[in-house]
Image 1 (cartoon, rainbow, N blue to C red):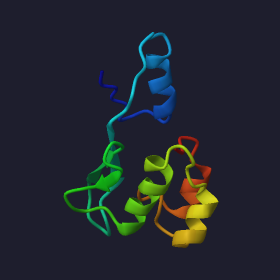
Image 2: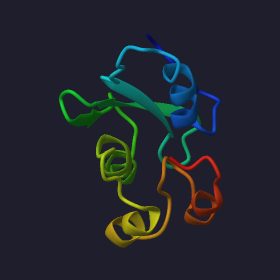
Image 3: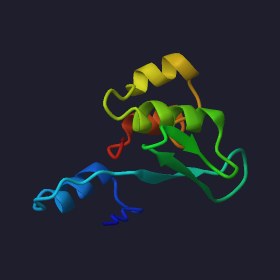
Length: 111
């Protein structure tokens, strides 16, 4: 089963809606997280989160902050770091998949 929610502000809710009526257990082996390209570069970069291998990787492009944030918030899904913890660890600035600190804290679609 594949669930694509590229435009959704609530990916977890979408996955819950699809899997709730199913009687089978569903396991997510990997997800792709789209981040803004670094610096002034236009576009996006896909970061692959491999739950089975416990690794986050991308061919090129994401910042170390994006990789650390994705690792702490998504790969560590059982006990994800809070936005406040991420600011303490990484400092303020462009985080949470390329959004500025002010935009990230007010974003209702936060993961």
